[in-house]
Length: 342
Image 1 (cartoon, rainbow, N blue to C red):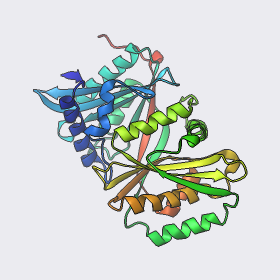
Image 2 (cartoon, rainbow, N blue to C red):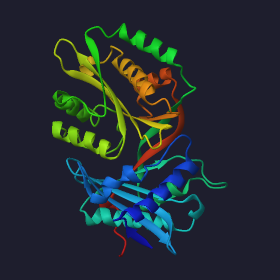
Image 3 (cartoon, rainbow, N blue to C red):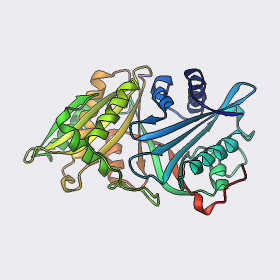
Image 4 (spheres, rainbow, N blue to C red):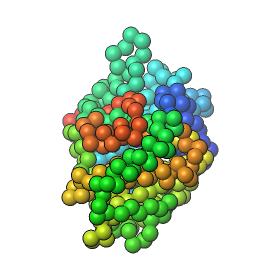
């Protein structure tokens, strides 16, 4: 019933399951298409190892799963995702797929699995969604609450964005903005790597066991090249301190030109010593202007923040983002859960 995805035909079926699932479950949110997922067929992609699994009944795809194994840090941890077509739920496919993926986690010698579970409305008469029930039944516990927020094209005008940028600029003396699309100048890679490392230490993680990530210029360049190979466009804005010439903040938005109505706010960070100058608002407003000028087709811009990240949520609220649903990270410590017979 389950087979590993190793060719483009199986990958097409895998992305079809994700596409139908996202269309049914979410507003303004798209799944990866074939070109975005294609690099994962190689297994190792930059700093992660991937396994994709497809569930079928009578040759008809019904479920899709992904196992992600970090390779540069967090070497005891894995990330597990499982999706079931809306019309095929309630038949045991999700439970079977999750059991397979957790078995693969053990096979790789990892002791921890992170499952991301959106808090959708449970079925009529149920206290929890099927995904929540599966996570609990596996022995996982919720450790980090995130909220997806979305900005639609009608939620904010160009004039409002320009006004917010002008407001933030009044507090940003001593800094300048740097912009690029797709590729950052090579002399910025080390600065950007240092900022990316802060994404694993300076953002709220709740009770999630996640080690500080090890970043260098080569890892940054690899991630950048991967986005290009996936056909994604990246609009980026950084804040540079004039006194030292170093980047002290960064934000980026990703757009798939094949699905141009959807966009994703990826990372935003300001180094601790430089907070309090409204650099987050300044960078995000300027980057919205950059994205809108180049991709006017974008209708939905999505971002995720920890529920406790009051500062960034405040910035997003001012820009016009509105909450959609919670996405909960569930952590499963495999050492505390007996492995099922296989």
